[in-house]
Length: 197
View 1 (cartoon, one colour):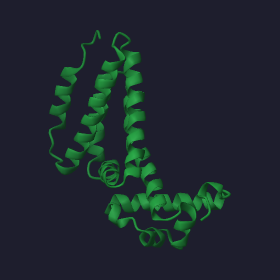
View 2 (cartoon, one colour):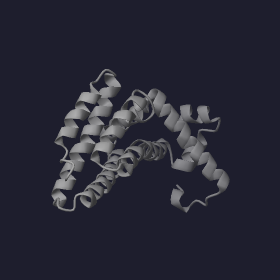
View 3 (cartoon, helix red, strand yellow):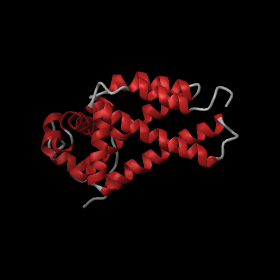
View 4 (tube, rainbow, N blue to C red):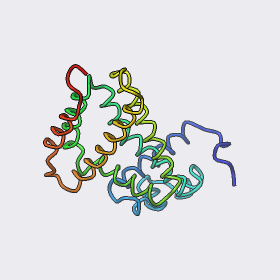
């Protein structure tokens, strides 16, 4: 078998590869992992199933590429929202606005499928673990800069708790659109340090 890393890249090949990943993302969002088959992706993309083997080494390679892209679509916007906020209260307000917009579609459905995929496939689990670690490190670094008097362990602990809470809120909100998000975030805001730090 040819090593995929040794294959020459072409603009056409890159576009086809991108098309297959985007098609896989759409199927994942609509049908979950069971719907992301070689045949379904090839049919939806209007291409030959053999190209999935050529570009990805088979379905597991395509699943890994889809998983990485879905992780990027789910994790990075939330991290950027938090990093772009003026302070923790502004980040909570952004989250209050973000949850209703994502419930049951796009990032929320993909987040649920990422967790399912990560629990079933150790290789996919390693990708999600690494992405979440990087996200926590970025947020903890921001908290550390905002609160230089905090020991690093506090920034890391708060970040881990916040990221886990966001994951839980997203999943619960996907299941129950009447989840009292405003009340949850009001309690979270009470846990934040006072305006003076």
